[in-house]
Image 1 (cartoon, helix red, strand yellow):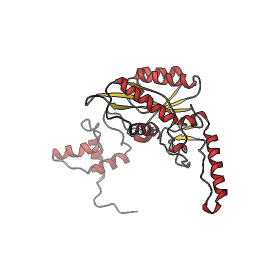
Image 2: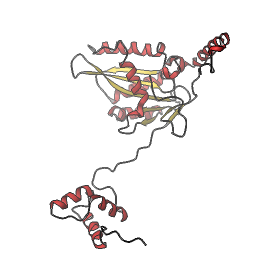
Image 3: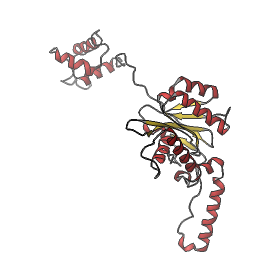
Image 4: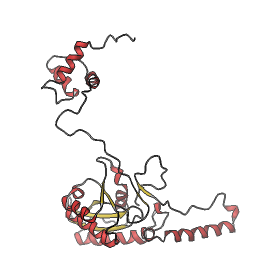
Length: 296
């Protein structure tokens, strides 16, 4: 049997710690609050860590106070094997004509293809605009009645009753980012970065119509001209329509002909022109990541 440490509290002192911690004065306070208050009264029983240790040993280390106890948040994980299975969306600021004035760009994209399925620009954030946004996407893509998950952060437009009622009416499953985790909605965030780092992005917009015209031009460019790095340099429109495979086959043929003409120039196989069949939001760590969680 190990000898009892000389600095350890006696049985009576440990009992006194528990009695004080559970007294009406301190029952709602953590040890980090109890110990300094006792010191102000000229009393020292034990350190904060010793208080915690004694409470833990007595199975009394529960959340104290009226504030909600911290909760572990489940990591949102979703897998798309084709278009119109998983959407992500968010809202970003567009600078207005004067300092402190903004317009709000709503963008919703298909995670599998990166196509922007719908967008809007408004003068304010609101749950009603969010409800209109998802309804537009469902009708434009013809996915009413199909299984669809939509991922978003925890902003008030995403939690508003009008928006949630619309999701319920459309049979859409909502998914939310974990509070304080910035990369849970990485697809939408990266899309905003692509938009704002375009060479023609203005320093500010003079009015709402000007912002709407720019947003429409960006969406058209992004769909049809932008060769997406994480789509092996096909456009989101090509990926969404399913013609990316034919494009890749054409590229493979070009590379194989080039290799046949000059085999000495090719020390390895030709370039891999293919994309994974699955695109994940927060792929489980046990599975290899074939594609990055980026949108641009």
